Every structure is written in C-alpha cells, then in structure tokens.
Length: 342
Image 1: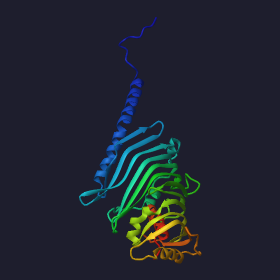
Image 2: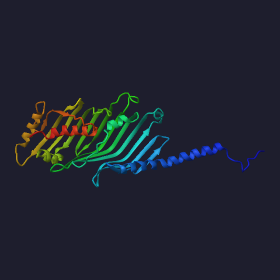
Image 3: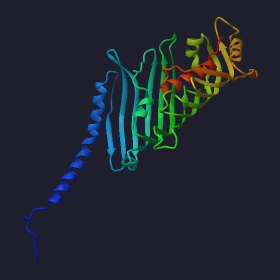
Image 4: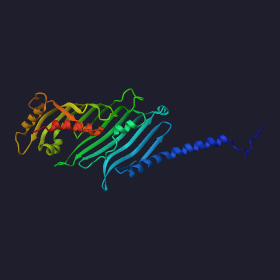
C-alpha cells in the first residue's frame, strides 16, 4: 500500500490557486473601504461641495452595490449650506452587459431630501448634467425608484419669507439611457406623487430626453385639495393678500417647443375667501384677475371658480439644467393660477 509522505510538497498549482483566492478575498474586503475613502476624499477636496458617505457595501457576484448615509452640502464662505442627503442608494448591475462594454442596471434611492433656499443656495455651475451623461459610456437604467423623498424650498428674499415643501415623494423612472446602442429610444418616462404642504396631493407624469442639450419634455401634473390658507405667507409676499378659507386644485400640461415651454393650467377654487385690510372687494378683483388671465370664459357657481390659463415660458440659452427648468415651469404655472394680477 502506498502511503503519502508527510513531507511531500504540495503542487505549485495549489499555491497559485490559493494565492489567487486569498487575493480576491482581500480585494473584496478592502474594496468597499477604498471606494468610501475615495468618495469622501474627493468631496473634501472639492472647491464647491463638501459631504460624506457613511458606508459602502458590495456583492461582486450578484452585481449589487449600496452606498449609505450620503450628505452633500454647498460651500459658501466659511460655512456649508445643507443641500442633499440620501439614506441609501442601491444598484443591481447586469454583468452580461458589462462584458459587452455597456452598463445596464436597476436602482433605488431611499429617503432623498433636498433643501433649497432662494437667495442663499447657489449651486455651482459646471458641466450640465445632460453633457456629463452624454459623455459617459453607453448605459441604461431600466428602473430607478425614489422612495419617501422630501423637497423644501424656502424663499429668503421676500417679506415675509415662506416655505413650499413636498413630502412622501415616491417616483419611478423607466429607460434612463444615453445611447441607442443599449435602448430603443432616448426618451425616459417618470411618474411621481407626493404630498404638497400638509393637505395637497401632487401627481406628475413626464416623458423627457435626458441627453438633449436643452431640456425636452412633455409633462402633465395634477394637484388635488390643497388648503389654500397654507399658502398665506407666499400670498402676502407676492400679492399682499391672504386667504381666509378655501381649497385649491389644478391640472396643468406643459411641453417644450423649440425655445419655449407652452401649455395651460386649469385651477379650481372652492369656497374661496380672500382678505385684505385695504380692499374689501379683493375677492372680486381676484376673480377678475383670473378671468383676464384665462383663455376661456370663467366658469363657476357661488362657491366654485375655475378657468383655463395659457402658459408660455421662454427658454434661455443657459437653461440646460432639467431640475431648474422643470421646477421653474411648475412654479410659474401654479403661481399664475394662485397669484393673478390684481
């Protein structure tokens, strides 16, 4: 019977495989910390932003990646102005597409929050996001989900100052891509819903081209049953009036056409009561302001007022940021419905 000698040397192949496995395990352990260090050091070196990530997780075999505890602030003089925070970002990558030189994935962004202060927050101007996306390798995100988001916009330039906020934001974006090589077309679609202030429900459906040099989109939005007294600070700031009672709802359709955004908004006011110390007939003037702004004859009963207001917003050559253009268009449309010329 042959017995294996206890002093027999293991084959070289065994040691090569062992070294490779140990190296892979070591890389798997170190890589998340290396990525976290790189992100944090890059943010600290930035002249415009500061921030951090708390944790990076990776599962290379599944193609699953997670970044947790993200914060991004804007540097201003010796202070940092809070801008964006995210609880976590998770992506699942299709490995097969990577071997073809493409990037196909699905993702979820949990609890994103953004604070924007008009007159204080100044987002540094670099390359437009559309240009950055165009210059990347071909990618397609089949589904990007945003859950439990919050946006707070405060106007610090008016007297009184006021805040417009949206909470409980859930959104889904389909076919976010930059190349026809990995997708049938370049248009993405988005559906979003959330709570506007305390009582309103806002829903938005939009198709858009994320890599066009200037924003190209077609959007429909519906707001239901907002207690209009929640807008009193904004009303005092912009129109020197206040609302004693009433609800506000609206539907709007806005789309880009060459160098303009055009469309309409149809506001509906129920049980509206407008107050002013200087003008007892302000409600009548408010109604007349809506009538003058509308393209249709004012329709209404004793407690219900509605009309259709045309919207035309010129686009400047510098209007390249989707977020600013889309939110600006919505603010303009709803602003014209609530604060007509009086």
